[in-house]
Image (cartoon, rainbow, N blue to C red; front, side, top):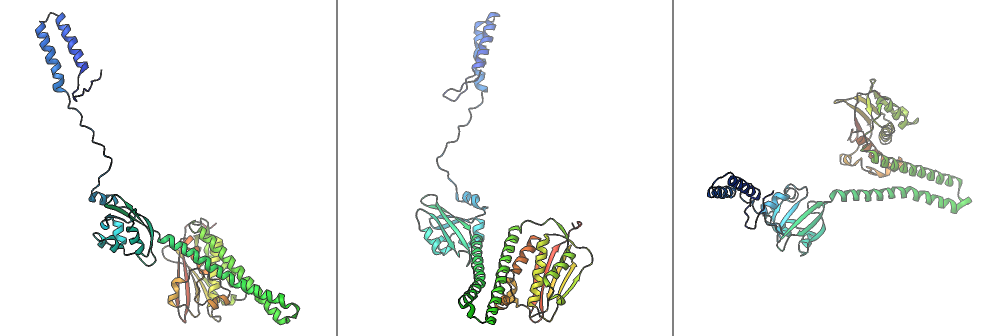
Length: 402
């Protein structure tokens, strides 16, 4: 039988009392004196309360709200990955580690409007109801932050900052790419349409030589348009696959030798010099993409190098188990300020010459993404009046080529 807890908080040992009374009755039947039996019964029952455990502590009171100290709030947000500020009215009393890194340690104790110094941030801080706002240029000229302010009570509020700079950069890059692609596509189309309209309007009245010149221009611009579309499609495919590392093992020296000849063509083969290692250099790669890489680099070197000088294709086994492919031209060279931007889409050091040579401005962008997919490295070195060297390093594997 379980013990019952009465209103005063004491336990009543009902089962023990029943046993004590039963034993006392047995003593009376055994001939023990009544008074002695009664004393034993009273003492027995009294020991239950003497040895009884203390009542359990009262359950803590339930509070409708939660009180957190300043130090407790600081500990709560300190390791958050987002910059977080705790404001007392407009004064910053807590700034977590990420906020101190992005905005500075000096902001603690400052008025948030002075610390952030941005019209959009100041406007948000002045709203009694809180809310969110986009703050551009908060931590740098091109930075983009989503700032949110949540009121805790009439005195305290919490400010959270989310960095949207990368998303803005990607969006801007896509916008620029579409604009550049549209411009590049529109240029040959405009030329084709213009010449064809002239041919249609003049008809039989146009001189044969002039008509032949127009037809040649239309054909050239059509081929340029096709090359541009082909490169756009190639770039799109390479970018889509750049996180998917190739698994097939290829024999690089044979691939480079054949692709270099294909990129040169029969008209320029006399300018091509090759120094390719005789030993096997196996790499893990996509055959079509690596062939495209070699063709693009060789074609660029032949186009922009000195027409009277050779282009060297050199393949060796370098240090740290890396295959080293070098394509060297002997031409005008490229100014140092252009080198960091050569792999950008549609970037040209000399737009007029590039278009005249049939370039689309996408060749090195495609090469860069192919190298990244193959976990390699691309370096471009150039010296004015000497020439340009493009170096591609790819990891060598120990497996047998397939």
